[in-house]
Length: 83
Image (cartoon, rainbow, N blue to C red; front, top):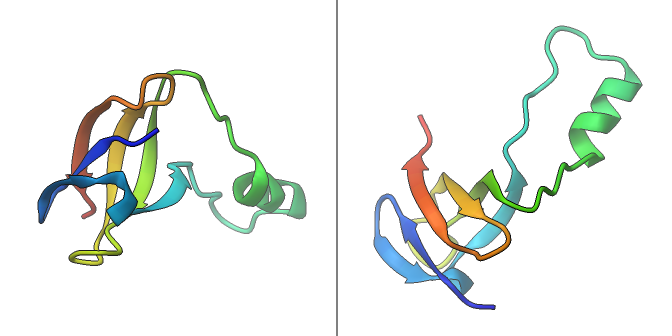
């Protein structure tokens, strides 16, 4: 399913202009053990509903940003620049 995504720098574009970077997750602190690293690298909640995700504008400004998207309808609630 195609949908529109708003780059914070370039404006509204087709989702095909972007690369998906995965869910926003909390990084382990300190010196994590293997279990914590594996959970961080491979485990995804993959919720049916609103989640925060990393996106990369590969056909435009090449910037990373965060989008809040409903995974059941692909409705994008908001996008924000990183930093």
